[in-house]
Image 1 (spheres, rainbow over the protein chains, first blue to last red):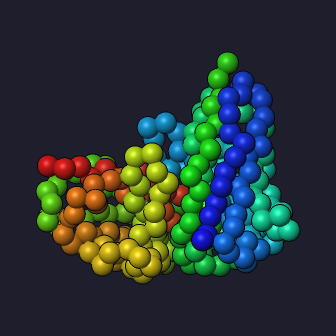
Image 2: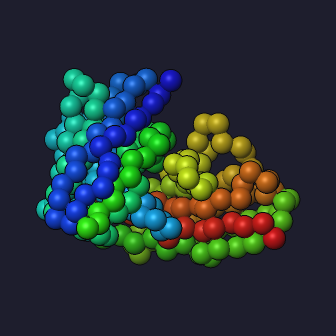
Length: 124
Length: 107
């Protein structure tokens, strides 16, 4: 069974850091691009970051560029999101999502498998 | 950056109705437009990819069309389990972007 399991969320003060993890199973992790998507309370979906299959290409939303870093360890079947300089507007449920087909973040197909989400709350 | 705008933002419909949601991109994105359904407290679920391809396991009452800048999601006969929020998303180029969502409510 294909599964994505996020962890690492929690309560952090403004300016603090969190590292989210997404452990995957049931498919060849190294063959797919991966993404992080977030949803603030009561709001819509916002794409945060994406990474190619090898990890060689990384992309970010303007709202997190310079503060967040996406990475992956294909030997551990795990995706990461390092979040620094956190702000109140970063409060959200963070989902990791697998690209349906393809090694690149953009291009054909959408995101066919999603984790259950992990919640990051930034507040003093 | 490419923006995608959905309309309407919400709608009320009855079981059995035909429902249409539109999505417009700020520049041509070929067919790289995807549709998702999300229910409260759950992760999104991919319905349609590449504008008109039905994702495996998704009922055939869902269909998508369009190319370039204008796209449509159609539910041919609304079922009770279809009451949810729907999002379009462009995958033509990074940053990937989602539409604001369309909430489909029971009339």
